Image: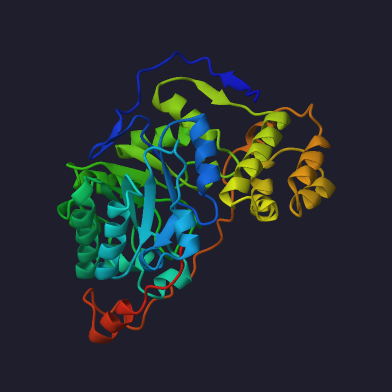
Length: 396
């Protein structure tokens, strides 16, 4: 694959940060691919890894679905032999189920690193008290994290926590949750600088990330939110003092961003400036890698690649007729033919291909269990709800 790059005129610099150390794991490039539902499957993780270093986390899987060995959950946590270390993100609202799930991952040798999700803002998660709603209940949060750490420690597997600022600006939890997680023995804490109410709207609050970094001087703190380029990652490190960054939507349709991030963290000026042939070749390779992920089901792989088309071709002069056909593609042969019809002379379009991708949306009401915000302790009704709340929302 031909990759066009551009060299800035600035001189080479020293490495921006040292490697990220999570227990026995050393991540040479302190960059983490954030779990994204329907995105960070094996194919996309491996594609990103081909461009640059980091820690590449799978889609969120629920503890209960994992313990019940539901086929889709087992697919989500599947890693190829070249994926090292193997990173699994787990979601749970119940300490007992958490313990069973982590024990399964440990005893069956399915993970080298476990990340606990306390950041998901979608209603089907928060209305059950999970994701970004859960740290509000401090004892429940502590119990889940401590259980995960205890079970993972049997195999010296590091546990990390990913969370948001809180439910809304009146119910911020990140500093207290960060301290609880540290005291429970996690290897690192990652903070997305938005509340659950914000979803992905507005700007990420990097000052909150800096505040968490200052309040937790004894473990690594990672920052997440609004990293659309290597330059954004450098700015976050400089402004907040974090030990590494977590990248989500910024790499959609741009797996080569991990190459840019590695270069920036190593003090190199090299950046990818992909022309249309490089973009279309990468999209095709992505589609090809999805076929074995879906156990040879080519049609399902093509259905999956459709959502990536707009991200890959953001800013490129691809006609509306071709775009329409690409987002309805049914076979690899058809995709290959359509990509062959693109104008191969189109070069990198500059700023139009950069910046935010995906829908930012607007602030949304956070769906919570009844009386959730009345107290940071669980009442009896909420305790019963939690015990029955582990639903099949893997990837959610």
